[in-house]
Image (cartoon, rainbow, N blue to C red; front, side, top):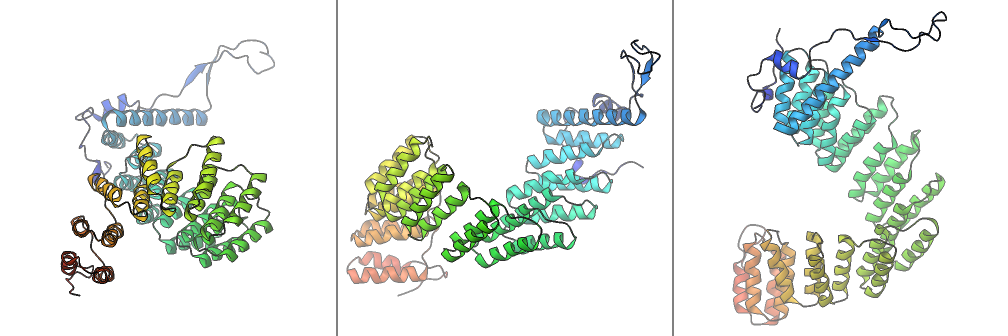
Length: 493
């Protein structure tokens, strides 16, 4: 009975192989079975009678090892050819060759695995999963067949696709190892499907297997994104009830949850647990603590942590970025400058995080001129400008009442096809109102709606109150009254 062809394996693109006969394809792929391998041995015979003599008899390798070696050489040669053809003519060419190999009875598990991996690398998950499913139906799928697919799902944060891959594995009786469990949970956590991630971990525990600490840490990272301190400590209690020992990543993640939740008592509890399990804090731990104390305004405590850190571990660029950001948040640009100089002296190159923090600091210290100079220097220096960096310089200009440059950078974002947040438009509109600049205020309001933004009802009401209290600006009042609000109807005030 001829093998059935999956729907997507039709010969849509195989210019080199179109119309080729299966036997010719098999020959060029080096797929035909060879006779048992014989070789002439020139090594001395191991028998006592022939000791020291050279044997010239024909020796056959042991049948099992010979067959295994030949099989491995064959599929390795096949895979090299599949990869070569994919590089020359695209992955569709490799798919067509695989199908011809299957029809000729020469395709093995490793060949399917190779093409699945090629499809996953090109972001063709559905086709890769269909091919893995076909391998499962033929009874030749194994755990390596599904690994590149699950890795792709984790990298993309696609929890739904990861579930599909896992269900396909289960349907064909392929059980996952800890690597696949880690990739599955990573995909679920990144897609914020923490309930499903919890179920995966519980199912592993119910099966009697011992989860690796990476699985617990992955789940805990999901709660860090939500600053859910209670759930974070619930996961830690699961670790304590198991035979798994927490590592530094466990405590760093737990500390990160506490930092995001701005709970100093929880931070102290986490550090006490870290001491209990005799886990030595590294640079990431100190960086997390620095971030915590800087965020809650306890900068002197942050400096104490920094001094303690220098006695045990070397500061990293993250350390200096955290310290600079803490100074910038307070508007203390003199101290931020000192940390910047120290960072450069230690051989660290300032990155986009460093520069964005400095821009925020110049905004806090009401120094828009330095913010603009720094931003222009960044563009000339070849920095990749991120959205948060653009907003940092715009906010610095608005804080310093430099409406001209703020308007310039907003226009620059629009020219680059970047969306401008509604709250940025509203802030600029407020600055125009405070300056009694009706012409620019009207243009700002129109720019907001032209860019696709829309005022919230509460924001519109607040702006109208501000205009009326200042008096005048009648044209702006009319424009505001006619403006639609986020509840999708015009509202007369």
